[in-house]
Amino acid sequence: MTAEAPLPGRECPRYDVPGWRERFGVSAGITGRGTGPEPFDLGLWSSGSVGATMRRWRQLREALPEFPAQVMAHQVHGSVVLWHDPRPSGWTLHEAADGHATTATGLLLLVTVADCVPIYLVAPAHGAIALLHSGWRGTAAGILQRGVALLAARTGAQPPDLVMHTGVAISGPRYEVGREVMEGVGEPATGPGPWHLDIRALLGRQARALGIGEVTTSPLCTAQPDGPFFSHRGSGGADGRMVAWLGRLPAE
Image 1 (cartoon, rainbow, N blue to C red):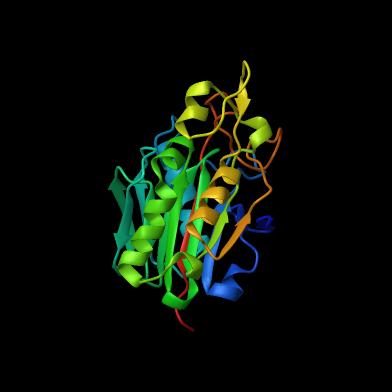
Image 2 (cartoon, rainbow, N blue to C red):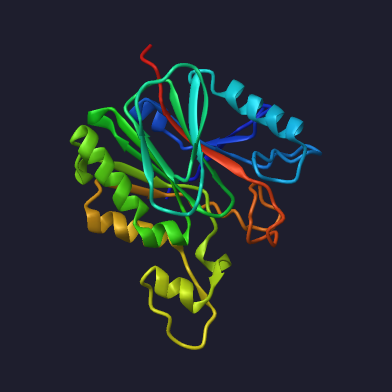
């Protein structure tokens, strides 16, 4: 397992995937809720102040100055993965997609999460990356398979060429679900229930079935009481949102 490492002393609370900058020339990580009086909520459709939310988004962008362009989407818990060519500076918001992929440097891929799994994919030899938002519905719809297929179609990268990390998300012991969820993802639902679903473990099994070359998993749980992350389930739907990011660093 690989635990995202907090970087102290920054206005934007961030947790980077250790070693990926050095190994693959990418920046990969996730924001946290922060420790100040005002949570670092990046949810665009929350009831909070628009001005305060946009200020936090500016802080995120200032914390990642290597990436003048950023892309994200209004997520719908589906399996659509968008391909992005190089683009000028600025922030682009798409509709109805849950994943992004590119070979461009200086372009930051973004997804919002608060229990769902951010899936980071890198094809080092092909200079390609993908970032996917995968809750139980997206996992059942095959978003991992769609992301892998898109990288293959666009760059020729095959599953053994890929490195995958399933990031900060709700853990199995804290994710209690009903029969419809278990059946939806193809997991056995024996006994009277309720059941507990470990989405990251399920994605790991999917990755091994696809033949992905290297797979790591964060041990950090969003629903840990008084933890450093937002949790939709743990808060009863009242919590904010983190942003996970992945981008290829410009050549030095």
